[in-house]
Image (cartoon, rainbow, N blue to C red; front, side, top):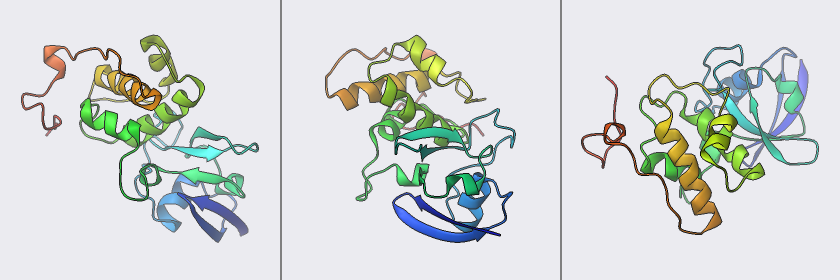
Length: 185
């Protein structure tokens, strides 16, 4: 066993873990952060993406199925559960995903949101092409990505605090009742 100390969503955890424990399993099974989903277990889908501080303290997206829990020792990790403000107010990216109907089944959403947050750290005013490039490695089988890209652009605008033009959804991208996200049975 290895003793690790990790700050997850602002709370310090010190635990003994088997050295081969993946970060995704540590977060889900020991810390209880089940919003971090296990998708492919091969780092291909991006569903397990979380933000983890690098040695300089900058939070970067990592696929938690390809990181050992012991590699997170001394680091900070932000999961989808920890992205919202303490009072429950949604992070601008979460809000944009909701408002732009950027999810259907929701399985890929935690990884998409956290990857997009990391993207905006480096590129606060991205083009559509930069958003698409920045989300490579995150797979969605439901949405066709249009509303996801729109959400990232809307979040970038909200974080800059300047109104601008957000591409209007095409008629086939908007659910019949636009006040509710589309749901796939």
